[in-house]
Image (cartoon, protein in one colour):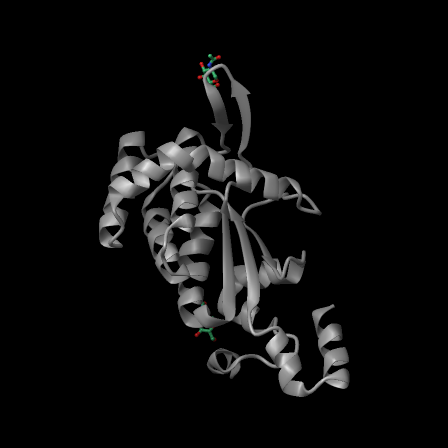
Length: 216
Ligand SMILES: *[C@@H]1O[C@H](CO)[C@@H](O)[C@H](O)[C@H]1NC(C)=O
Ligand SMILES: *[C@@H]1O[C@H](CO)[C@@H](O)[C@H](O)[C@H]1NC(C)=O
């Protein structure tokens, strides 16, 4: 599909203009905080890959996964696949996405938490880790706390709306979409080597930063 559009554009417009049209790949990552496969993807592919090719991707992190909400007398309640600590961490990550940080800084934080957290941690251990990683990344732990309490539910609700409008629906995590396209090859390639998966997705000509990774 993209390649076809690229070929058409090369025919119709100048080569450089066609290349400019997809200067960046829009990368949506649907994930959840305590799923081992998501943690592995973030720590070993997404974070180092974004460091490699930050300038040619626009990253949208959607930390919700298979969580869902309902309302009762005490307000909005979230049910998360891997328990209440996952709901809490999803809110922490959601807050991080709203902070004035670069996408590499956001992933540095999330990767710090993802590399050291697991389903078997106690709530206190998770809270301590959230703070340790904030300190390491020069993020004010108190600001993060305030955001989780005051905006966490709303941020997750926004992600829920976005996910509900996905077509086809979210079936597994992580789900990775390039330029809003469902593509099984992209999903698989991203898990094998995210950097290369992105660099091979440019329709016309890969950007300069990619050449070192495509030069086999
Ligand atoms: C609301 O749901 C939560 C989660 O299931 C439960 O712990 C809480 O007791 C419920 N509150 C009321 C008022 O029903
Ligand atoms: C992805 O492939 C590139 C180029 O071969 C390599 O430099 C990089 O280490 C690989 N990354 C991972 C996570 O395997």
